[in-house]
Image (cartoon, rainbow, N blue to C red; front, side, top):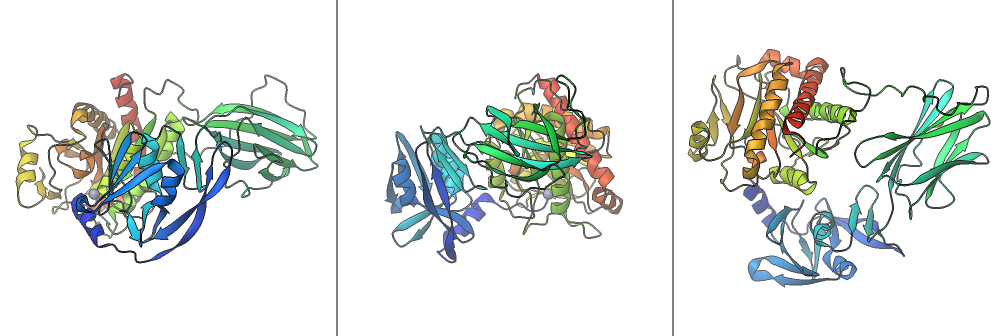
Length: 505
Ligand SMILES: [Zn+2]
């Protein structure tokens, strides 16, 4: 860990943000049961924003500016939202929600980040609001518009078309002349990537059907027959697998098992089948790859950057969890980008995650110090060492075995407090699972006042995967073997915690 950016310092920096660079962005489309209409968006200081006036008309909001309090007071039905004009924060009924940027004023008009709609308006609205940034859609009311992702594969002489549909939606698959048509019981489909598909011996194209609720699979002259099955997929996702057979082969008999699934890009030791035991209350797991963008974290002796190691392991862990548990996994970043600490916690809180795992690598002045460590948050009364460090003028925490840890001083009132016991259980499960697979530090389980865990309202741990200041460990952390071993160990830890907690959060 490196000095972690203080939330307040980050907020204060935004005080000076003026309308600097802005440009029109592609509009969003507001979709209701009856109509579609455009909603203008602008890019201001790198953030996509909506005019608050447009949102006020759309959602029946009243907006009153309170310059003395530096806030916008927004009334939505019976709810009052206080939106700071200087910080990227909103308060709804006393609950603080972070935004990617503070509002920006241009003339008489206030602009707010598009995420204001999903993070602030949607939770308080009586009407369902669903902002889909990748598709530039804003669904208002009970609009049935499932997301559909299509994959086309060649499997020997056969072809397979896989449609992942979220949420699961009733459907039918039928041959209509030279194409297969997948028809959904929906108002429309959200399938932005549908044109980007591959062709095979049997499939010449995949595109939206003649009606907005259908997908058409154009067949080649060699097509003979097909079989469609629904298969389990990640939570909230339905998978339709359509196997296409050429004319020369015998059509499949009813009840015959489907051909073996294509190889999955999963880490070694991951069983090929989904774990269909009850998910034990684990619906969403947030993995937080430490640092990123401007903040490289620890730099190894050979120049390895902590931010790259944490992202690489996070991606492997995400794939392993999705393949084995079928649980939704969100990363707080999936690129080399700067993400504030409060934002990382907010991603987990806003998505009602069941577990939060922050990944880091350690540093020590002593090159011999090595091994993985698991932390959970220290509360008052725990860890004299941690408390001393938090009260000390310098924000460093001495480490047993040498070295220091940069931390940030935190107040003790914190969202994590009610979860400390469960975080402790989670940390012990993770430590035990890591110990079975990777080298551990002499003090493998610790409590510390870590800023990134403070605001997280779910069981949360911080894992230091190893020490980059140890040359041998740095080399290991760069390799596939160690990264896979870490991902597998962390997956084991999640499963152990789930089993031990009997499915409660
Ligand atoms: Zn770190």
